Length: 351
Image 1 (cartoon, one colour):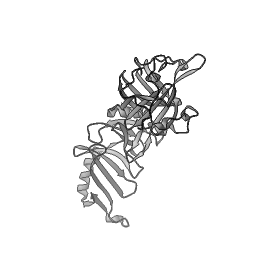
Image 2 (image 1 turned 180 degrees about the vertical axis):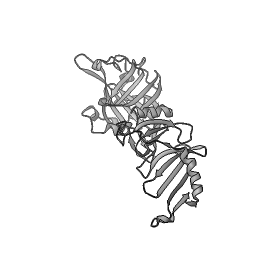
Image 3 (image 1 turned 120 degrees about the horizontal axis):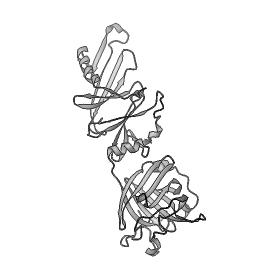
Image 4 (image 1 turned 90 degrees about the vertical axis):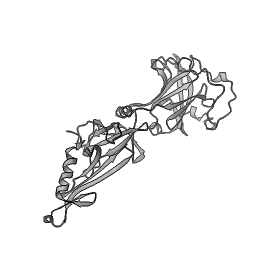
């Protein structure tokens, strides 16, 4: 990031306990992290870029979609600075997004929400935070810029404006376990990404959960569906529901049913778990497709089998049985099906 020359003395960006992270806004008394930001390194006094040198952000907020800008950022970020270590947390709530910098619930620099965001532009969140509010409603603000990238956020602070904001710390996203990520998806704090379209994201609240309707979803079991030693999450639902995988600090839609032509289930076959899609939508026709993974992003084997009329115009001609496009006998087909269907697990929403 292009740096601008700062002409003010270092004392101008020193934030004392009385002016940084201490407020009585809405009756909540906040206590600043001990040491706070009084020891910004003089060896590396970084500053925000020239593009931030505008007072526009201190006027009316710009038009922007907070959800669209922040949906990839929720999580916990760890940082270390001269004055100590801490956590930067971005969390989706029912009222929007909360952004906080704290060591504990009683020791923090700020506890902000979407209303404190002036604008989001060029991968930077401009946040005007009320650090002190007097009894007559007069506020003393701190000016924070959060510049975000892949799994990291750089935080800058200005005492009087965004223009003079200087570097505070570099925070890296905490690598959560698969179960922690799936739990965060279930409680609505993070989204899931469609693995076939990385621009498509959604939250658990976008699904019709537990309504009792035929097309509703419910939380199912956690099973190692991709043979990688970590469990995936099953959301039971119409035609078999949706399976979710957690990796790389994100939750992905791993497999999904698509109507009667692609009914989703899974089975155990030849010592591994296979994802299975079934099509029994037409009379005299059954078709099955199976996939084996070693990690949800690593498809290692596929298998197709089914039965259909040998001559659709003459039912008396009997049935034709296939396995991986090769015709097999009725006995071979029956033996194959007996192994696969005996271990099949259905994940359709139960009524």
